[in-house]
Amino acid sequence: MVKIHQSLGSYPGIADLYAVKGGRSIWVEVKTPAGRQSEVQREFQRQVEEHGGVYVLARGIKDLLEKEYGNIG
Image (cartoon, rainbow, N blue to C red; front, side):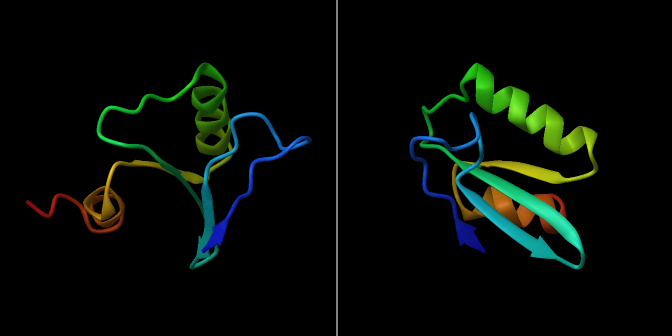
């Protein structure tokens, strides 16, 4: 997993973390329980999913595990 450092010239809305697993592109946006995606983050998510990538809006590790393994209770 790679931490994406947001800086001048970054792709607008790019997720915080990126990984490749089993040939799949996985993008993770990390938010606090009250955090919300910006419009450009939602657009980035749409583009990732439209091109076959996996996008996870994670408020904790449980969100990542559920995306990979289904509902874990």
